[in-house]
Length: 619
Image (tube, rainbow, N blue to C red):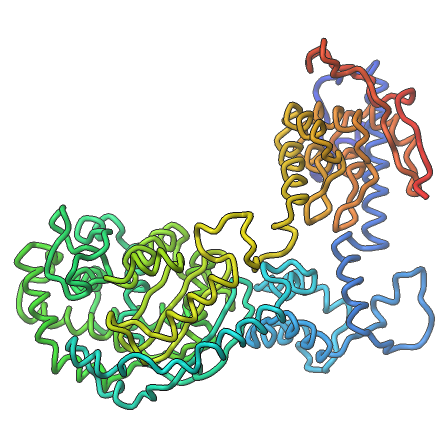
């Protein structure tokens, strides 16, 4: 037995204790306990081999809902061979994922991995590769674990909001505003003043679009948040020394004023954007800096093309007098980095600044970029980490307070969502942990923001609980799963959290509020599951004394008993094994191990002895 024990110890399956635990009467008894533990682990290994893991079995349940077809004759053998004989059509999987709103790019990449032979069908063995895909969204969609599970009702409402905003014909054409502000480009003259497009991309890669969302447009000032994130990730200390974080004064984006510390107000005004641009890889050649800029934008937009509008760039440089005046004023105030000393070097920095605003892509691509920010810097389509979470958090704070210049306060007051606009009619909305929205309509208000874009954003927050200060009791619709919003589930989460942290006093208070001791979260895990998993044995004993069910299985078919078999004392495990069988439910009678007049240190170690356990038929 010692040889077996040492062998299993080497394989990491069993750790031998150097001391005899309470309840073990002798070293010989300890040896017998190791035999029992080995037997239990062998049984578990055999069960996994014959029937697969709980997660695999759950995937097979999903597999069966996709209308599998038998590709070979014969009957099932021991209930397992059928896994290898059934296949599903690719169309069935695509239809299910499209129903959840999953982007075509994610579906295409998933099929490429699951059906490498391009047979048009997928076996269950290949279907199991769903767990190993680089993007976990398809599996979560099939398990109904997306942030926005009810996709059709959301898109229906988006259609209504689009149709409601489409008739708006107020506002000046984009080129009229650009002429007044000295930022006109030839591309603006070709824009349809009545064009309108809205694209939505969630953090789970769900996508919806309507209108003019595939036509390339110049991003303009919507490039500034991305430039800030690039520099903040690369050299945050230098950027903080030279650019502030305050809303601009009355001069808006073109202000020559500085904040109380003598710095440009924020990275989105012209002065702050010039300094920010100059700090992006200043030691590299111009061509290399431009390549890094374009590569970052390609990572942001995922599968969508990103190009460079050379016409807008050349026209912008031809009429860049006000940009040069800003740049030299900043140079005189000492805000440019030390590498900018001569007129030639200043020319290069203004050119690079103008290149930022001359990037061209579609509204659909911009929605993916906004969703990347909403997802903490990770692209929801490719799962590429573009920016760090800390950088994105700071960027969204700036978008909330400074993204719409003079109108930032009004926008935050009415809509309460981080946003960024440009004179090209673009409005980006970043809803943290939910989705990104890109709206394009080239009719602008007096402040230079899209009329339809602002109207769509206002209608959106009136319909859904997306304002950052919306109350939990609001009557607006929630875009998250219903389990997060019902009061009963919130109380259940409190019970589970108390079990996970081992706080017996909090569990006692929840029980006094008539909360069920078996209350579970969205995964079906109860406080007993979590207490056992985290090794809070005194909490486990208290939960059992209050009627917690050790046979209650979670979403993956794991019961607290399965966890207790691995973590509990071997003497107690021996007693439990003699009473537990697959078709019964174990209930522990009320014991006195935590009476009011006793402390946890004096707990009764015989709480799980045979005298305190009774079995009842679960039927």
